[in-house]
Image 1: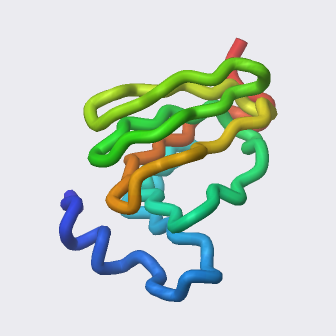
Image 2 (image 1 turned 90 degrees about the vertical axis):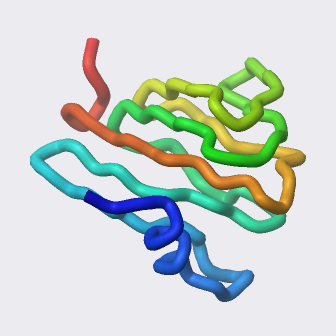
Length: 106
């Protein structure tokens, strides 16, 4: 088990470092915390991905689709799809769950 406050404390604090920490890895499943500052510089992932927004607001761009998000929202991204968070609040943080084979499930 791991919690939000403990995991937040394990995030890198440097502004030029990718702010992500895995709390759990088991088989193909990985659960982490992502809390970018300023810009979201991530690239497409090999596995399917689920975001569960913990706090903050902003916009989520997935391929050509843009939508607003807030705490409590759940966002799904298929493996290999371009996506990023934009115009997010300074307190933004989200759980990230990866699972399945490279290339995603069909």
